[in-house]
Image (cartoon, rainbow over the protein chains, first blue to last red):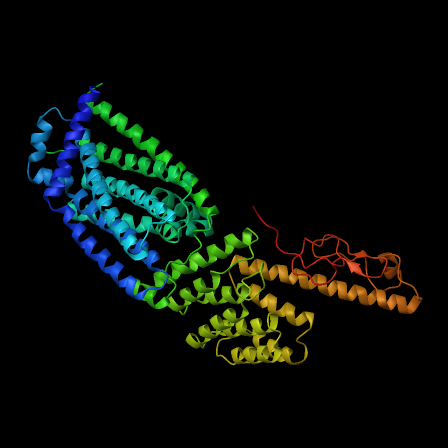
Length: 263
Length: 306
């Protein structure tokens, strides 16, 4: 296998995915984000006492997360179907491009789009923070860590959206991905339920709790809003978890896409 | 091997490996976060806001908060914690979202009022929660029982306890012990039988393992307190009859004041001390006992489980 060629092909597909997302005016969400955050910053500066920073961090990071998840779902679900509808997929696959390279390239392109989007939003969060606090503090470093965790969430959402879109319609893929996002965000409660349930129910709840993506493990927004540190071990474990979970979903997408009849 | 088949095999291998790896990583995250205190925050503490956020699905949200309350208390209790500051807001949110969730009121009556480490040490919050429950469920005898139970065990206000029990006894559907408890409050409030009746009713009227375990521990402690009181009375009587303290339990048996070798509920014989006091052999083995402890030893607390 020509690794250099593979990398180049994946890189090309990824770059095209990113370019297409930009052409689709995905980055326009930044305007809404900027308006939301600057409005909130001015408002909390007027009405909040002592919790301006807290509100801006909570609101800013939550907005980054939700905007990103919505983008990941709505672009991710169309990545395969749109190529089939426009018949561009046949052009791509008629060239020396493997199906798995196409899937991985799309994944890399979509996550790349979200990383760029998150970087731009992060600048907005820090500008708002500076506006309300008039200076940066050491604990603001943890906001960067929370942003990194949000990117890890996007990795999983993108992989799931791509997985579902490899065999389902865009609408159903959106429903499945969003449902898993909601369930995964409540994963701690599922875990708690498993802990206090005995017998078959307990085993079943534990299995489901471990199988669904655990987005709550990747959510440290409230923690960093209070200026609490995030442990290095958590960063390592969460990174490994997000990478492996994404790899699992992408492998599933590759397996399904390999067998799919595209005629 | 053809290229697609090779890709399939690699994809299956990656899928299985990453699934196992992701589970292991999540397990490691779990262990790490369980130690963290950052989890101990209530993101939304206003029931009104929560009610709006629930989009009408208040029942489901109440169930989630109820699970969270039990989990919170259970984990802290196991760790021997003395800080249960989230228990009251969690139960308040639960019952405001679903005012008919009876187990939450019973849990609150049992674990909000007692002093740490047995509970949150908030009798006021326990009373408020129970009264809120009665306001929304005036036909539930259990809530009047909980109210009487709180006045009796935590506040020692027997008149109010009697009032609560008698109000509960007048309901169309009630427990047969309710009128008996109401009557006993007047003249026999401080007696062991009354306390035993209360804790037995608590045990019988719940399926919650934590509440049942708590009731059993109180019943065992009551047995010890009653045994020690009875044995010390026997020692006193022996002293009055013989002009000296008994040298052993055998002396009491010979005098016909006790039968056999009296033992605590765990089967360990009671010790007769040289000064005539009665002590349990292992003071840490039975919680909540107030008698039979060596001088200066506080009432034993549940052991920390690490």
